[in-house]
Image (cartoon, rainbow, N blue to C red; front, side):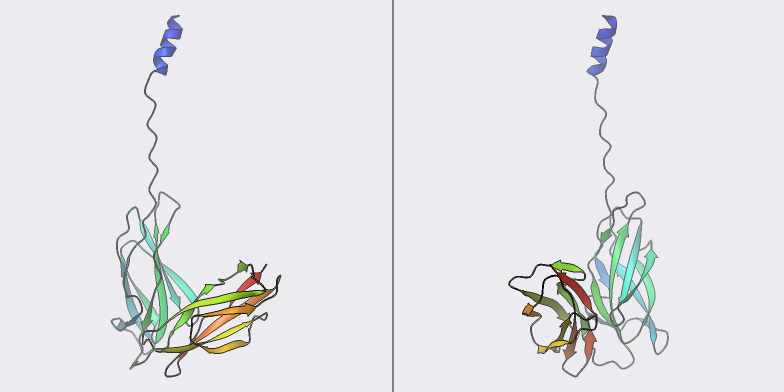
Length: 225
């Protein structure tokens, strides 16, 4: 009976408090270079290169940052690490770029990615800028698509520092180097494009501006179910 009483008393004790979960890093807010800016504040290194300073706000629950910088002409991306909220990188002049920041923590595997911003690193005597390569929004890379009545809709988003885009050439087909489907499209979509089930398609957008500058989105592929 003494043992039973002891067990009863032990059972009435307080339960241990749950250990609080370690918070994940927060998403940073980008600062400079500004969105869609013609970046002219970098330090010129040579006729072809300049040093650009990136800055962003502090993110809570974050120990370090990973900065991704993408050359929008070649579609190549490189990364740099930082523990502060500022970093300087050497980039090609007269070239459009996009950038983002990933917040990281030593205590959790979760990360947080910022918005993606674009800017133009101006070259010597630049007075006009080629449009940014179009962002493909639908279908996206390697997406599986269900066709309705044997057709799909294509969609993209174009932007330009000079706001002088006059049209888009749409390339589309079953080859990795797709042929021209339609030129001088003034909308950022093309509806009712005929497709066949079980087929992989490739497409890209050439953006054109008022003075003849162009940019290439790069080729995207998707499969029709």
